[in-house]
Length: 326
Image 1 (cartoon, one colour):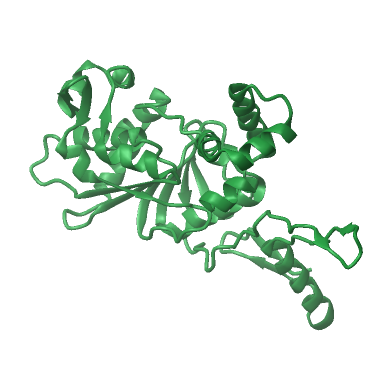
Image 2 (cartoon, one colour):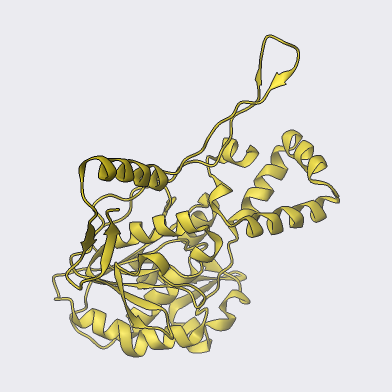
């Protein structure tokens, strides 16, 4: 509640186990043993609210995370993607939950290497977004420590970074490819006409409803035939009717034709009302039922179908069931 009120982010959409781990971590850091004590501490200390918020964002990233995946992107996927574009077309890439920019700059490095010897290069725009304003500020600056560059390798470090004091800054070639912006993928409007989305290790932190919303948003953003890259332990799950699997090993999916989401589903907030005090001295709890938009849609559909329509099923061109009418 404190977090949602102060930063307008509903962490109720994250998996409960993740939330518990991060709260326990902060309690240990503060030397607090019970959740009741920590609740009181949060209500008094604004700084602790900010620290908990940063912990909940889980900004874990580095350059070339999962090297085999990036090797596949460079040798197999990205060359094909670049060939699909004419010299007057811009290749548009979206990296949600980009944290401090390492993933976006890694993709930019691969593209720069692939186009190094070409006279006429395909223009590239990499839209990199994150919930954290501070992470986006750091990504825009593009400065990293020597330790951060450990996974980059000496040759790439020399080519793509310039030493500034004790840090290393990305070269203009990479910085010009990337556009960094704050963005809440669960609530803000998506980008459009995207050719490739790299959304790795974000879905693992969300509950089922939030995962559906993210995948619907990405489906909406992608061009027909556009591709989605997920993390090693992630799948498209219940959104499989929108995506064909390109590589199970590297979790690469292609958006199916004619399966654009007409309307991105809304997600109900997970907040509950305060107790209501009646005329008597005893507090009366306010009973408030939280119903998700998907549950409400199903209820309305079921009522209308039972009264006015026979049982039916909606299928796509591939004869796959999209929706059951009864």
